[in-house]
View 1 (cartoon, rainbow, N blue to C red):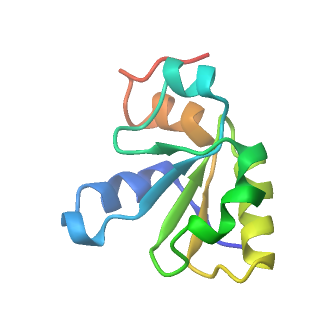
View 2 (view 1 turned 60 degrees about the vertical axis):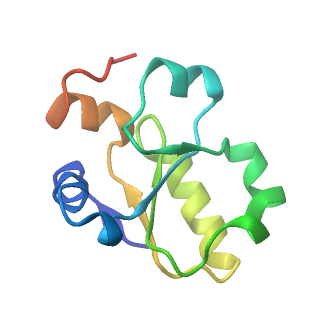
Length: 107
């Protein structure tokens, strides 16, 4: 399982638009409303099994949650489904807010 630091993600997000990874936020809708990374898409963890066939298996994807635990579980699940180009965001949105973008609220 590949881990990605918030600094590494920030560098990727600064790159060319076509090379940016998909940001898949697996938190609950209320959490996403409180704080999220610009450009991320909400797909709550419990909906993932029913949405697997709708996800692009070839596009690089970074999975995000609050601290990195739920996203780790989602990455493990997706890897068992044959996904290969996945990363877990270490420290989640909390680390992003603390280390990269202080405009993102902590909760």
